[in-house]
Amino acid sequence: MAVRTTAANVHDKWTVGEMLDAVALKASRGPRRPKHLCLDKGYDYQDAEAAVRVRGITPHIRRRGEQPMIGCVKGTPRRWVVERTNSWHNRFRGLLVRWERTAGNYLAIAQLASALIALQIAHWF
Image (cartoon, rainbow, N blue to C red; front, top):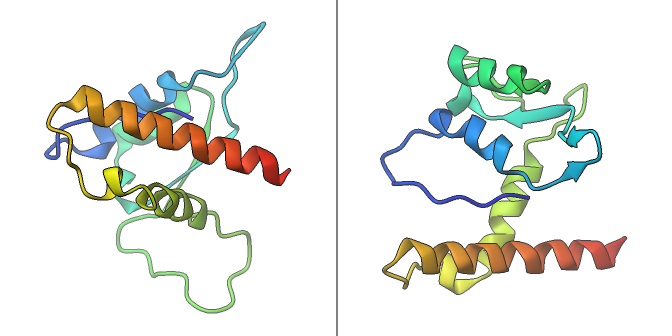
């Protein structure tokens, strides 16, 4: 899991490559990366898709103008994983309402919350 902070006016497509490089999982043969990455319509750009493919990851991107998936859907919907994680972060009031003025303090709280979430998930399995 990786946590980064950016300005509010920076589009997510510009940071997708940086976020994938920030993942701290390392193996003896190099970085361990997921095989698939689920992204929403905000990442439906050629440069964002290319940044994911360069790292050997298959992107699953909802396309702009594509009809929403409603009702019984064939296949496995994966988007809920991202929304669920955002919901878990919102349980921490310091993240939901940003009281910190400096980005470093906010980043520290976000990393602490992510560590606590990962610890809770580890206890489930």
